[in-house]
Length: 340
Image 1 (cartoon, one colour):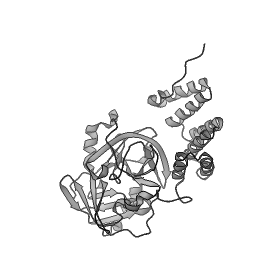
Image 2: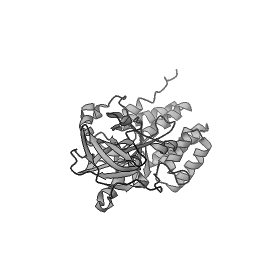
Image 3: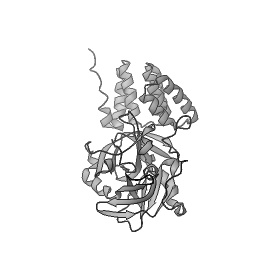
Image 4: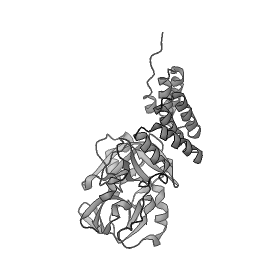
């Protein structure tokens, strides 16, 4: 969207290319998709831009503020139906805006919680790719990043421009996130803002104001640069760019400032692995597992490190642990045949 594409993050959309897990079958997604609408913005500088939105309360649609930032008027569309947005409530820091739409004829979603998700859990993204028809992408949670009372959800659901503001559903088809951004150059760097951030806006009816272009002071959390940028975004960028020494420094500082979060220990393990320090990387993962003992992907990574160090017995024990936690992940830890 305009100059935003030149920032660290690239705005998102979604694709239909991935097979659906049994728990997220296409028929059920079709039902949930009735709550995902197209957002049409008439821009201050002329022309139109397109995004996505989700009905989160009666007559109320959430989208990203970057979708509506230049709006002089906004319409919400479903098929050949069109509704004019009456007012907007903004949480610019979290890039979430609520649109009040009188007489909206679309069902509301059920709200879930990002805090209840697990790494590896199936999720589905729904939005308007490239401003065209509604598309869906099924995938899984890659990482959960704690921030401001919720968890920014990193998943492998592919999306591109036009689906900003769309829905990320869990296996019960509850809205857990709002599709927001991706980091350039990363196959798995797709992020949704947590639904928990909506609570203050939904509770404040006085926050709605007439639709006008945003002022120049808006700064979305994913746009910020170090040192005010969220630690998980700094870590993702350093990992993407293979800057292992810098990632180690960041991860150690992060672990000190957020002692009960396993994420910095995972980032530290990636850094130490990249530096060839496999023993230290394994120790970092063990620290992470003390904080999140049921984190299957962390166990899998620890098992892979054990195999790379020739520790078959340790890897076998980890595989047994994984089989109890997540058989699908356990299958990814392939043990070599025992010697004679």
